[in-house]
Length: 442
Figure 1 (tube, rainbow, N blue to C red):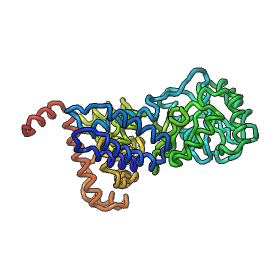
Figure 2: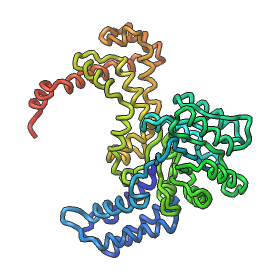
Figure 3: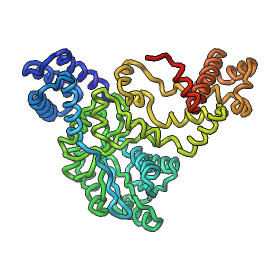
Figure 4: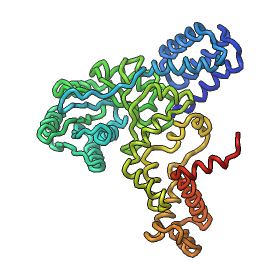
């Protein structure tokens, strides 16, 4: 996410590294490089110019403290200004009525239906809501099928009327059903439309006027850069939407849409999509995104993702098993599944300060756990519960059954044993204290 922009901004800061003072000349040179990096990222030209002008004025107006370098000061100013550029504060959804009606709009292929499913899943699991999905795309039967599949997958009801060709009537019917069944949120997935298609734009305006949504979310493919911003402006003029959703941020995103959209349409980014999984949806935090763009990581989001996946009761049970040295391959397999649900591995690593830059040229395979999973799945229930019984002949059978080799099985067994020892020590305060005492004095 934003790797090229991060890399170019880092190079721009090098102009000031080692400089003892901030001057008109070295700031001007740095700002020139930063503006170039923003334009390469497909940021709106006026936005890029206004941004660098603001940073330049603030940099020249600051005296450099003896404790920080000009480069550090500029990084701090950039972080503050990037945060402000992307909205400043986190914009939450509003739930002023029961049911709250959320209308989803956007171009063809932007990922509206997938986002609709993700949003429903988020509201159900994170906000304790009871959503109903309404399939309001009358032109593409596959969109209705997709929404029904997603609804089934996440356990959320979907209202569809395949016989009707009236999106206004379908939306109203969905809302009536929600009131009848006690659903407190209705999410209406509309057809994708082009901003230049007047008939389609009139149609979505009619849906808006009929159902009076409390939130209108404009879904945009972040990989389209500046085109996304221009389209957002046209849609906003017609719909006056309440927020933006950026999809496909896990792809080769240059960042132009995220950095430009707030300044052009003056509407906040509310969510970002980072993958196809239903859990791959994040609330947009401008300050955290600014930190990630500048290579400073985002530990808060990483911890939040972990908390969403790791059940407190399960964690307490696991702690007991570790203390009794009963941690087995069933527990290990369960932990792998929870880590996988947290999202794209490279994206997760990018949240750790300093790691994002180190990983920029490294390919991280999301299937990295597949061999380990195959080995564990080739074990018998008895072997999973009693790892100490897995002798050489069992290892040979497991290697054959998992399509791996004996070296991989041996490596996993050693890593598992080492991990068990460390976990046992960490769960025992006395052992930990003893280990600390044995450590050489610094």
